[in-house]
Image (cartoon, rainbow, N blue to C red; front, side, top):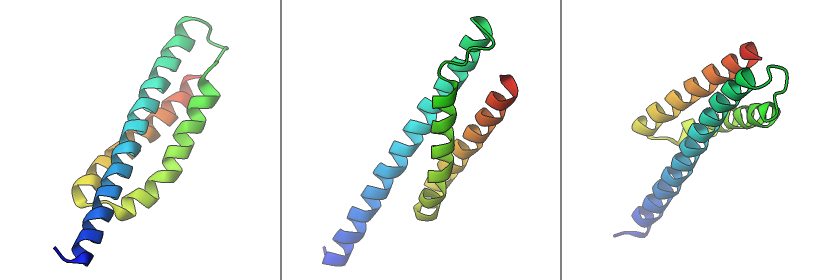
Length: 98
């Protein structure tokens, strides 16, 4: 295997790890947001304890995704675009829900 091929493969693996990590964090944030919305509605409608923290996570993930989309393979891009869509939907629900 040539040096260039090894470097390219290493970069591809790094990108896959970055994208997998992003998708995992996005999924966890969306789940936390949905849980927080449910908790807030069930317990005390005007006490959004984790709300600011989760909204901040959503905003950070939304900013981070553009760089990953530029590096992603077509398959990874589909996964990232789906995560981006879910994050934006969750953000909208959180803004309207509280």
